[in-house]
Image (cartoon, rainbow, N blue to C red; front, side):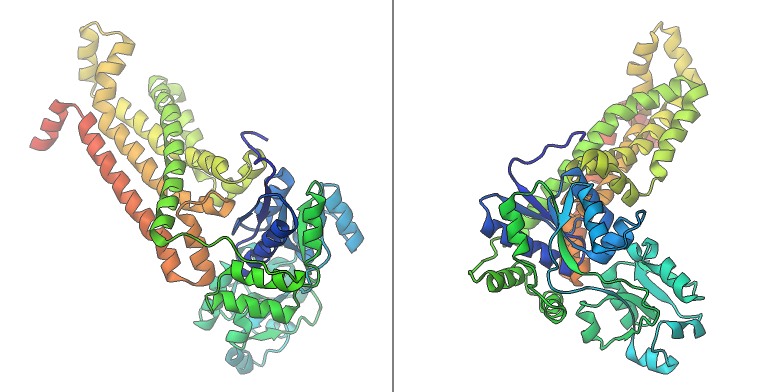
Length: 485
């Protein structure tokens, strides 16, 4: 794997971006730590199904909580998997295995507010065919899953066209506020009881069973596998829903809740040792991570974009082709690019830096090209009359005159990188995006602000520094001319 540096003798547990998966990930971390001598870390909120599965295939992740229905009908949808044995064989061909069920199924269901369901007389999913104007709010991943929205719509012949993609936890808020009429729910979600939601009967039995299991690589140490298998039957559906509620509504720490379950299952007192530092220490650590992401990506982009921009200005025939090429790179959706890079670069810092590098190219290349091609011809003729070589003219005349425009492009790239770097948290890069993700998941405004405010402040600081640098690199005569004008 390009640029990937595996950690020595470290077991990596991952979890997806919802509370239950984080708790199950913490249970795995604590159980493995108790049952082995290996160091274990938990990469929380790593992203969606495809992110964690690809990370496991690539060897970046050793264990993550999965669901059998998701594996059969989403992750491995291209294969005909008719039975549990087929699923085990398909995973084994990829060097993966799964444990016995953890003890509960977290199935899909369609949820409505009770008042709305009673008003329309809706009891089953089939009843929805008589109400084509209803608004759906479903998880983004559910939109494209093989067992998701399109399959549900086809199976029931649903006429609805007003469907919005939302983060899972935001869907409940949209439903409660009346912005949507229907959402996809997980049957262990605590919001079901909180809002007394009606779960419509899946009368055509469209949704399969989603037993919670641990997916792990087949090279995982046997002691770690035994620790995971020891969690079989640890939680039933009611217990999982109750623990989810304690985390989301009671504010209890996921690690503490996980330690409670592992202690009960193993009969040995287990304590969570992952307590976070104070607010100032957390912000400082996230700032260092964010600066590293932005600084490395921006530095690499400057080194590449400057000569590319000069080349585009020097070769007019190819200039538009070069600008078009970097422009196309800019159009790749950021989340898609992060996921595409995982098989090549793994997870964490390296793919995030690569993505930020790609998005930094266009503003710099474009401004270098614009700054050089918009220099008045009379000034260039004067430089030629002085007998300056092409290289000397570039260094002593063209680049100084184009410097304000070039610096503006670099400044734009830097500010964009600060914002985009928050998405790196989805693939384990940390930075300010981590508290934002957690805050959205837990509906915690303070956590969201813990990431959003420093990110905004950093963008303003960087913009101010580049404004000062732009004045510094602008030739004195040009500054005086700008001041007079």
